[in-house]
Image (tube, rainbow over all chains, first blue to last red; front, side, top):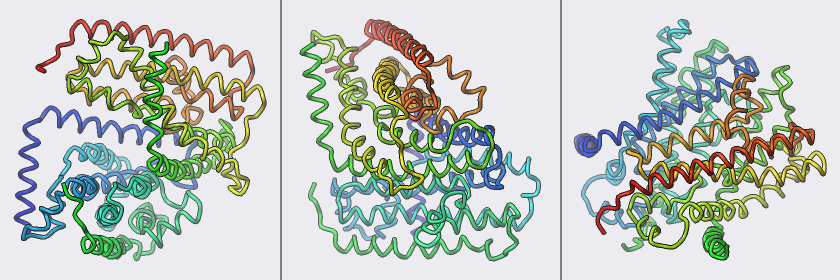
Length: 259
Length: 268
């Protein structure tokens, strides 16, 4: 199974290399857009100073992890994000008749490496953070941040699968889901408790974004010593279940729309 | 004139068909509105910098969400970009109309059409008192309301003349997508699309006053909420708006003339 995915990867890279210049320019464009998000944070701190006890560096950790996780998930799970087109052009019928896993094939339909452009800036900021905040260079903190990134990828990928699953019922693309994907990414640029209490509650008990972004952050920036927070990102795995269930129900209910 | 009205009508009527998309748009606008309000008011309440009051920022954000499609730099006419990349531009050129004017009217109709569907519901809901601290206020005075309408008009023309330049640059650009992304991201950020201009550092605000970006959405919203006041001050601002409109339209028409000389349509 893994071998097939590697083949998909190779094909996508090959097709990408046919248009090298276009790839580079679009990736720069993506990096540009995240640069402005970063600049917005900088401007706000420049004008107002710390926010509820969080420094600029604290918020940067949040920003970097949220953006990195989101871009990785957008790069590899783009097939699910664009699932409405797979349904409306009956590509899904073809997927169903092939003797390999459905999820694997949908993953393989689209891998958007340009989204990595957004991640590049995040990585640069990450490295700068280690330089300016040497206290981050400890094993427990690096492990925590690693868990945070993986958890963020899991959550956004699950959301993409959920969006695709719901597409079976609506046929049309569900722009409303962007509130949770893009909205979640933008909200999580800051520690979630700077918003109202209900926001934090929603993103803890309904969509466990705070488990990968807020609680472990408290440990990383030494606002909490609770060792449990290090492992909080693992709860994101629970979020896969309901999303996968909706997807499964959708596949079961699927009726071809013709081509 | 009748011709332009006809173009406007077609595009406008076409645009207001997408009611479900507008509904989804309204929901998205609300989500982002709440998010921005919470974020900015936390910053404002946490600091003693008296830049702008939090109730002014609430009103600003809702206005921005209501008129989002009007002042979003990426909300442009995709058909125009398609006609450039596919070569359909050739048909447009055979018609006895001014291409610049037609593109202008089409984009205006598209933006107005998209805005009409979204603005009213957002306006009505945001005025409801049960939203508490999230409630949008009425214009601070009758004069502010009048100036709001006047500057909205000029701001709309101003952003359109900027978007026209993006269209025209893509005709001859090596990387149309790159031009599009760069110019619209820049416009969006510096006109206050990501964070309102009053929340930017003073030095940035001073620099922006010398660019057209300062005079787009920033002006009408901040007149409405009372952040910018004084008739004399506003008259000066309107003057600068007109100045930039003249400059950008002249530049656009000049660029259009030049690229039309160079344009090569491949095949048929």
